[in-house]
Length: 306
Image (cartoon, rainbow, N blue to C red; front, side, top):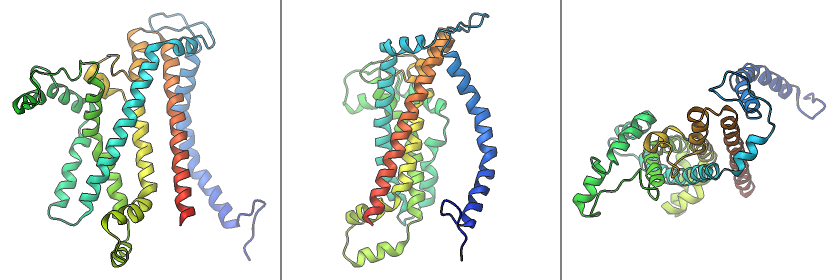
């Protein structure tokens, strides 16, 4: 007979919980020291009028910095840019990553070489790839304009990263080129774990390729797909280097991270810049909760359907 504790757990389950707690404790302590303390200091500075160009400590001003932040149209423009960038880029990368993963999951010659080549854009450091694409998108010396002019698709060079109407979409295109392999790699890893017997049975039952994808493949890889989307979305929400290298502090592409960096470094306003950083943290936290909740709801619905 299995002994159960006060909450209905067996003794073995309780031992596992205690063991998991002690194994996770060092990591929790490390996270609190590495991330918790800087976060606390940032939150404190956001409540002061401290400046980096003044030796005197800042005076406590309460939520004044947050009130100014909420009234600043440039902050809301940065929020809009970040959300548009994250939604559009992650959506395109997920769709393209799924297509590439499905193609690479099929048996064909040179599949290993194609998988290795697929990782090249993702392996290039973001600053390097951004600088490379900055030259390629240059209005006078860029190869993109040269190719479009040669094909007759445009009649004059386009300043892709300087035009306010095109700059954000150019940044999205560069991010899609670089990060799609990341999504494809995670989806491919999930596809590799699917048992082949299910597809053999589905083929015998007369289920076509489209039906197999929507009724078998997609439900089975949904947990891994949601993890990939969450990780990629969080990375996109805190984007800095790609936008800053391609277009600097341009209002057309400034993300929340670029805005916070401008307040902290260029304007030397530690208090207001810290408030912007905490605003970024709050929005990322809210998006994380929404994505995790959405993933749980979808996974719960899939389990109920089964």
